[in-house]
Image 1 (cartoon, rainbow, N blue to C red):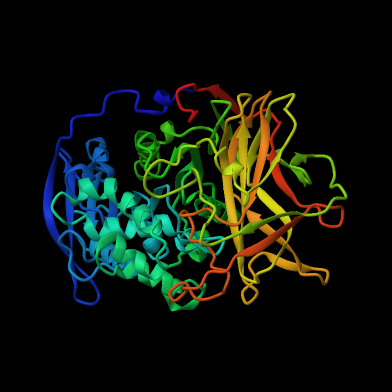
Image 2 (image 1 turned 135 degrees about the vertical axis):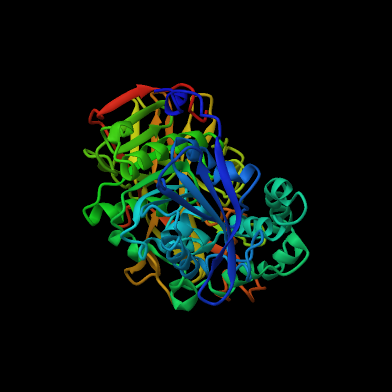
Length: 560
């Protein structure tokens, strides 16, 4: 199946519709938000409604991303600007107002004479988060949800494994602070990441980087620094993951293997499966701002809305899960995620840089020093803005703060499809430190491309997934890497990096335990990675060998 086969079979219809601009929508606190309503021409009775709530504007190029192409196919579209954006009243408090404002919008929608009694939600990224925020209180009229590159909670994406996601949060805050300026929607997506990276390289404390990026304090960025710890009112009112399993409306997901929100999108899928639902899931070789997933999303969402709003399931595929296997250059259909028949293999890290299925060896630990004043950089990997296409990581492998473990040359293809974990036995000279693990594919010419990665912040006051082993300060840490679907081809090698930084993807751990908002001092950490029989450090790879329901080559979609 080529990428073109996922696109509409016929050209999109001409956009014949009428539009009502600036509809006032009252909120519970008296603030008025503005919405536009698009209606296909020639309809005699109110068609099903698609509701989109967005902070990125209602018109111009944004209207296409907001769902305008659905209208000629017999749906009316209501697009509302989030509080404090593009004419809507109040102050934009990212993530903070979406539940209350979304519920009030649904109440308003129910009272409109043109509302036909059913609606769906649609949207990528923040738009999808806004849809999750209102979903638990939208029944029975909510009949379908189409969610792309998004999740019901952004908290864990802001603090990946407990470490602050500096690049993405700083660039997004700058983008939203500039987007309403003249030409802001055109220039901010192009320049905000560049500004954020320039600020991150300055070496200044985290609390000052918003000033360096945008020239003024940025509320959302400062809020994230101040609310780093889990729990509390700030995140409790912004996390809707606990309600996902109770959503009865059918949901279809679209994600990317290199998308910043993929792990939490898959958690939402699993929550629905655990509740007995049958959501659909498509994951392709895409990153967050990758334009290639736009038309795929449109086609799959259109089929979903036709099935659940108009009673026409003819466009739905037979199997609910469709995955693109990078390296194999093919799409595969499965009945569930993780794929049925998947098994976990434990690939041990060996002294001297070896990696394989053979058991741990009796050797001294591998060591390195992490200096937060000279943090280990990240090459590639998921980010919010810009490309997350896999890149050659060989420059990292020459550093003395990165441990490299490589398998022998593979004699056969190895399909790794599912969740990936690392199980490490480590010791640090600092109580507060980070560990980062990266899985890579090494081609015969030596190119070492990143496949997936993950990290964990060690905090003795708030253990996440680590525990002491024995009495000599050794800890066993469990690290979740990004899920993947990747073929390591015959003649390639599997490689693993272990480090303590991925800057500026995540902020460097200063080693002191100081709060992010006030941290100034930096202390180096001496790290030990154990890989003996009593401390068998390994990566756990999900191996799939069973024949999938459907395998169709697609040479157009791969990222290589």
